[in-house]
Image (cartoon, rainbow, N blue to C red; front, side):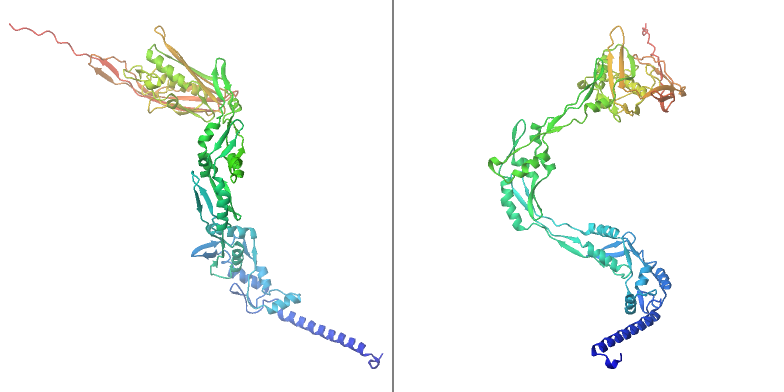
Length: 584
């Protein structure tokens, strides 16, 4: 049909179609022109963190940024607040420059997306670098700075004296780092600015105001100290007085109000006397010697009033008055620190070593050796415990049950506790063969053949001590006693170690060496006592350890003893003068 006969409506539709086709053709032409114009290069005058990359291809721009910014990406980021300087390590803060994405953002590389093409055409000047952010690492780094800056607001408090007097401690404002804002500012400044990032700080105000304090003084503080609080215990009733609880009480501000709070450590101190009247201490299990051997005395639990439970019980009635200030409270079981089962685990069942030392008939030896063995008898060493002779026996004085006697068999000196080294030597040898650890022992200065060679143990107060450590996994009980001497026969010192056999111990010794002959001394006094003299020498004693039930030696120990020579004393009295002659 000819346009001549077309209706006006048809002509209008045809015109719209032609206009749309013309616009599409024009846009397509612009698109092709833009695609040819833009190409794959970065738009001119483009800079990233001060580095010019305009006109460069994508790869050239990437290479230039890596070269120019490579030495800056690890530079610490400086931050400041009120003259204080802080810094963040970009690596630790989780900040990484994405060079490829940055070049793409700057327009590098051909794009077929018309929207992207429009963005590129409009891009010019400074382009922000694209930063990959590890949010968790950045938050942790900012939190580290916040710990140095944050000051919490101090809520008001009301504290009480023993007499009930009240003191109001005023509130104080605080401040805190705005962590989210600082994190954003840090990312924005990274590689873009050499100036320190100004930290953003926000004020932190207390949640409790003056009106809240006044209300708490009337509604809580006044009734809280109005009188004692009655505690109904299972077997008695006691009054908890104001001086006993008030110093531990305070009204603490939180969430817009003041609430009663107890300082449990302070309450422990202020209720000490009251708890002494109520508490029953537990009894530890004990290992004791009976005629048939070691026996366990079972532990027994006690009971106690727990201050934390007291605080929890009385808090609800602090605002009450009169008879309403009464609470029911129970005592708690107080378990023994060392229970019957603990005692069983020590494994003290049999004799693992024993020693006997003879001593001559002497009254002072009966007294001193009996006293020393009684003080040591029954000692229990748990694994890891160390025995000390001087700590166990104490000072050798008449007040402690000792008497004077010869300190050495060949000497004439008399001292309190003379002869106790017989006990210490027996103890040392029992410990030696039980496989216990040698911590401290001292040989006599001069060898005495009444003692085992190299295994004597001299003690003195103060000074020389005998100490050995229980290095086995079992407990050790020491049994010691004497057979008293009489006028007809000497006595004996006995020591036994009870435990579970852990080591088989064998002793060995080398020949004496470094022998030193004695000197001669002439004594012309009437009280002279001749002495034969004795050479000094050194000797090494070995201890071989074999695990109980094993066939081979596990290890050995070496102990060296050195003895001084003892002078030979020769009595050479002066010749007596004859009678004087008379003159004629």
